[in-house]
Length: 427
Ligand SMILES: Cc1cc2nc3c(=O)[nH]c(=O)nc-3n(C[C@H](O)[C@H](O)[C@H](O)COP(=O)(O)OP(=O)(O)OC[C@H]3O[C@@H](n4cnc5c(N)ncnc54)[C@H](O)[C@@H]3O)c2cc1C
Image 1 (cartoon, helix red, strand yellow):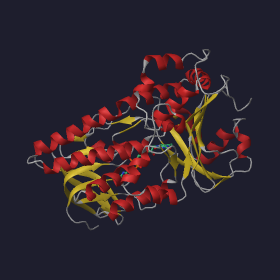
Image 2 (image 1 turned 90 degrees about the horizontal axis):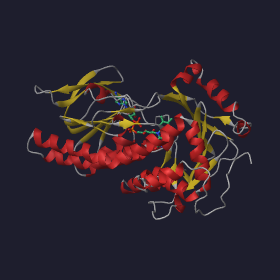
Image 3 (image 1 turned 90 degrees about the vertical axis):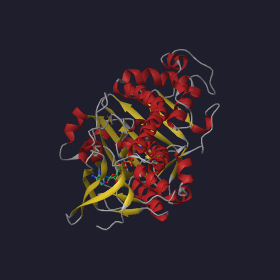
Image 4 (image 1 turned 60 degrees about the horizontal axis):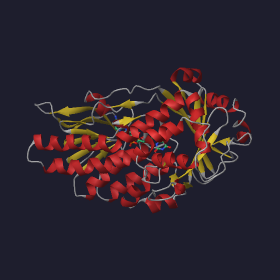
C-alpha cells in the first residue's frame, strides 16, 4: 500500500467517490481514493441514469466514452400497477422543462464505475484498489485526521489526511464510525439483481411492475442485455435464503404478464443481493469529514436516482471541500462542511418528499393502483413525474396540492395529449 500524503482521502470509488475525486483533483487538490474492491467490480443496481446525470458526466468529460461503451438510451418510464393499469411518462414530452438530454442512459456498472474512476485518475487522483478502510484516525481534539486502511495482504496502515470523505455506499464504515448512520422510517426492502439476454418486449423505456409483494424493474442496458431487479420487503426475502437465483425465477414466473417474456431468456450473470436499504445519515459532516452518495442517504431504487444524487452530491461537496482546505482554521474548515450539508438538504429535500410519496405507493399497492389509473388518464402529469425523477423538473411541480389531488382522482378525465383511456398490457 503506497500513497503520497493526501489532503483529502475519499473512501469508496463508486460514482460518488470517483466524481468527488475528479472535481478535487481537477482543482489541483491532492486526493487519494481508497476502495476495498478491484475494478472493474459489479454493484447491484438497475443501472439507469437520469437525463440530468448526463450534464455532470459531460462536465467530467466522460459522457462520450459512456455513450460509446454501448449504453442504452431510455426515453422514459413505464409503470404498471398490480391490476394492469399503467402509465408511461416520457422525458421529451414534459411541458415547460427540458433535460440536458431527452434520454436517460443505462450502462452496466462494471463498465460505468470503471470509466468514472479512470477519469478521476486521469486528472490526477491517486487510487488504491483492494484497500479497505477499517476505521478513522482522530487527532487529540477528536477531529478526523485520516483513516486506518487494510490492504489485500492484510497489512494495516494509518493514512493521514486533512479531510476524509465517506463515499463508501450503503452501510458506510465512515458514517458508522462518525456515529451518523441511521435508518429511515420506511419499509425496508431487499433487491435481487441480475442480467438476462433474450427478454422479449424490452423497449426504449424503463419498466417498473408493482405487485402486492414487491416490484420488478426491467431495462435495456445496451448490447442486447436487460437488467432485471426484483425488490421485495425484507420479510419476503427470507424465502431466498441460500438460493437467490431460484427465488428470482420463482418470483418472475408467478407473474402471468411477465413470465412469457422470459420464456427464451438466458441469465448471463449471478443474482446479486443487497439490502435492506432506506438509510440516512443524521447529517453529512463531522469535524474533518463529510459523507456523499449512498453513504449520506439512500431511500429506495424505485425512482432510479441514486447515481445522479451521488454525482450531484460530489459536485456540491467538492466545492465546499476546496473552501474548507482554504480555511485558516479547523473552525473555518468545519463551517464549509456545515455549509455543504445545508446546501445538500436544500438541493435534495424536494426529491426526498417525492421519493416518500412514491415509496408509499409501492408499499400500499392500492395507492399505486389509484395513481396509475389517474396518470393513465393524464399523460401530461405522467411526463411531469417522470421529469422529476429525471432530475430536470423541480420537485415542487409534483408537490403542489392541486397535482397531488388530481393524482388521487382516477375517474376524472383531465386535459392530456392522448385519448383518456386506461392502458393495460392485458387489454
Ligand atoms: C437494487 C438497486 C437498484 C438501483 N437502481 C438504480 C438505478 O437504476 N439508477 C440509479 O441512479 N441508482 C440506482 N440505485 C442506487 C445506486 O446504485 C446508488 O445510489 C449508487 O451506486 C451510489 O453510489 P455511491 O458511489 O454512493 O456508492 P457505491 O456505488 O455503492 O460505491 C461505494 C464504494 O465504496 C466501496 N467501499 C465500501 N466500503 C468500503 C470500505 N470500508 N473501504 C473501502 N471501500 C469501501 C465499495 O467497494 C464501492 O466501490 C439502485 C440501488 C439498488 C440497491
